[in-house]
Image (tube, rainbow, N blue to C red; front, side, top):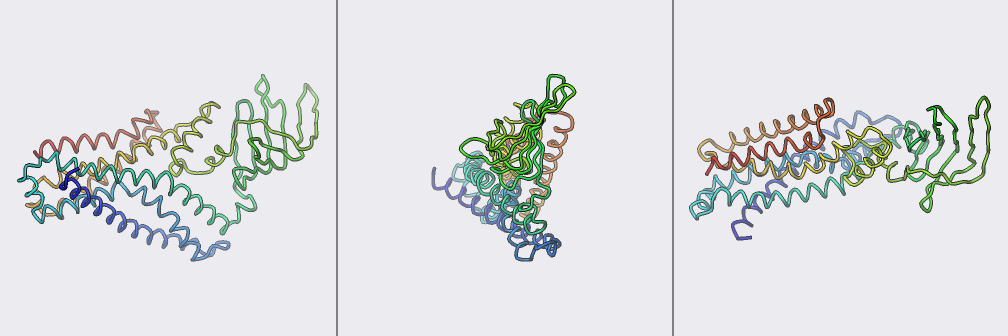
Length: 354
């Protein structure tokens, strides 16, 4: 990497990160103001509302990353153009493609930051935020209110009243279907704990429906054989878009093994892959905008165009995602279509700027 490459990449990177910080700060302020409306419910205080907002900030940053990088890159390259640095760079024999290469290098760094933020920081921070808020407002984590769920494991349908943690289930009922599709037996246990790779039951009761009769068997501590592992439970009650990609892959595998609907999770999986691509795409789009007579038309006009492009990308992305779910389009196309389409537009724009 040459001196010019490093200079351009550093300028774009610094400007994009600064813009992200500014945009995120505004979002945090507005989110906190909205969150204060919840203050007073249960034991939810202003301090807890602030903590919830701060813990949610990484997820907000992840969502904002493509748009912030677009505006930040426009500001960085626009400032270089206003100082006539781009003119000097072009006069030195560097092509538009050469400048774009430097911008893409910065984009790859930003894409890596977005990936780490979306996979490692945001999911755990958001789960902590949701748990703290739930405990304060309704104490639903400790008392178990509104934390029940249903799941399927082959011919077994599982009902859980409460799941204080992914490794403990309370109020467990497992319905096993017979060959005729009816309920053949019901296993009930007040609690199940995951220890040493197995679910261990306390005071389990098995009710078998045999012909015209019912047989009830009461057991002591036992083992429940199932494919429903804590890693799967950990994602059942979380929005797909807020899950890390590896958890999504685990849950998609579980859903498909049990012939359950997995489209929403598969879409979220591919959106996770598309986000770093979208970051690079936004930076590529800034190159033709800056070289498209920026000095004559002014930075303000280019920023306005950048905002319009960012909004167009956002709405195109969301619409195609939802349309894909409703009409059964391939989830890969729904997720990757918008960033690849805008990337092609950016490359076309660069060619015209030469």
